[in-house]
Image: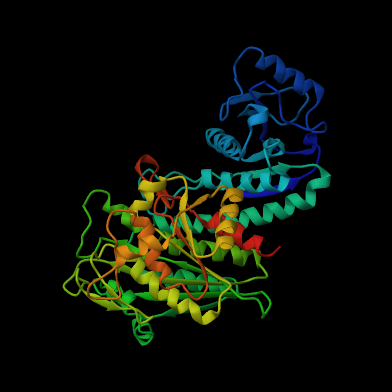
Length: 493
């Protein structure tokens, strides 16, 4: 997919199709220099016949319209003009791509991005236009050999006025880099667990580090043992795939700038261990490394933008499988922090690998630490698939992440982290248990992690409901890369 900003008159554009937005009032979205009077008059005469309603996502193709050299015009419905918001805009752009895929076109000129959207400017419009185009165009077909479709790509000319050219070009650069990071996150999530192993994630991190001049370390089991990460290694014992501990450092900020640290859960397959999961939908447990994938996707975007920031990514990665050596319910682990953990359920393993990573993060004297994890089914019950769960020990950090989620339309909802819930983790035999019962399961999981994040500002994103989709649309979503990048960019201002 190729995008270009254009300020030329449409009669100078060599395109196969022009995309124009239309409201339900049948009013077209254009500026005075983009469409001629004969073109507008012809379109209006056709719309009088009721072939298109202007409803969000509706579409109509017109051929050989007078007054314009572009042979086809694709009209895309935007709904009510005063009600056009980010969600409806995304739906319209997605409808555009679905319509274009059915057409024999290569070069596209778009006017849809100049529509007036609530609380948005041209930069926001372009950023979300590009990301929605890339998202709607994404296909995972790398491993198909039968009836494999050729991925359709377009050259898209995004038209703006000359006053907005520099802003638009900056927005295009940012959004394309973000889209590539999201694309990587989705592809890593969609890869099968026999390919996307801890070793594979380590190699992918090394590629990103090499491509963008980042410091990269991939620690093996012996090195992890030296760090005394007993909790992480306890989970890894049941697998023949060796665990890896990945540390990526993008040090392009001032030396005095404390780093933002992103910690991603990297369970490349979660069978539940001895507390084995039901067989139904267990294949989706390949997505239990989407936290790690989102960190790698975020670092790809950071690298492409060469951001003047200090950002560190930490990824503990292993499998959670049943085996003669596997962790057992009743086992007690000693974490890197020295705190002991009674394992009551081996399927609550994500917190066991994250807690050692959170302790490791202390050595970098961070500004903030944000962990990202497909941690609990309880979060899905609480929030469904629309918002990620957000927990934090710092109000400002929580508000900043919520704001970043609203701007990026990759939303998170803050959940309580009250002391009242901590007693559910009490153990008769260790400092704490790894589960606190069914009641408030997502909350007690966050409470567990909070015990290892007391020395810095910390937030936890539970993405169990947002990292992937099931059913016919099964696949990784790339969330919350958009939220994370928006948060990091907000710290540059």
